[in-house]
Length: 216
Ligand SMILES: C[S@@+](CC[C@H](N)C(=O)[O-])C[C@H]1O[C@@H](n2cnc3c(N)ncnc32)[C@H](O)[C@@H]1O
Image (cartoon, rainbow, N blue to C red; front, side, top):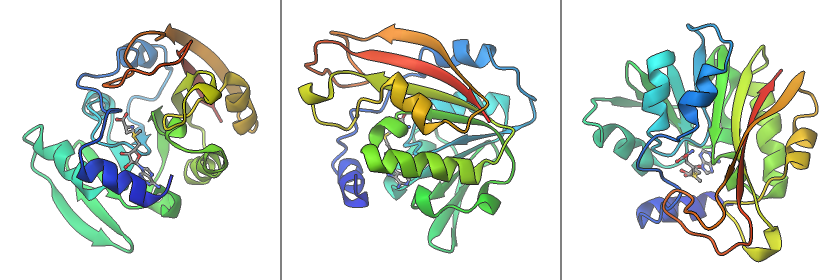
């Protein structure tokens, strides 16, 4: 998807992907992690997800998000003070618990993040068309050289029944995209068939949300 597409979504508040509560699997998945409690957490393509505030109870969180509107709403809707300052082609939103790099994820440099111990991907990989998914994973690998754990929430449906985003990303594709990882575990499956995905209802014959724990 091009930047224009996402800017339009935010401008017109067509943000059906946004969840009004934290993801139900987040606390469950998090409790299964064997992580250093002080390590920093990265949330690529974070939108204004409430999951970041939940994660911030467990470590400093850094998000990456294209839309300035999304970043402003992220803090303002929780009544949180923030500051914003320019940094190269980015704007850096600062807050004691959650920082956000506002700009193009693909232009981020490792030094902007520092060492990251955990990556949280909810509706980031699946927001991107096939070629961009490859670039996304390569960029994650570049930014987080490890050791790192990735909690990935993916979505599977018959791609010819609906056009994305969200796109269907099969388990096979996940395993192929992360073929450099030392471990890829499927840790949970939610059957969302006939049920809403955040604020949207899709007319597809089957809809599965799969949670992976990936390490490299
Ligand atoms: C499907 S939404 C998911 C947002 C969030 N993860 C959530 O769970 O609500 C994808 C988000 O990625 C952002 N985005 C898309 N392309 C991006 C890019 N190249 N760099 C940074 N953010 C991007 C969009 O603006 C949008 O907020």
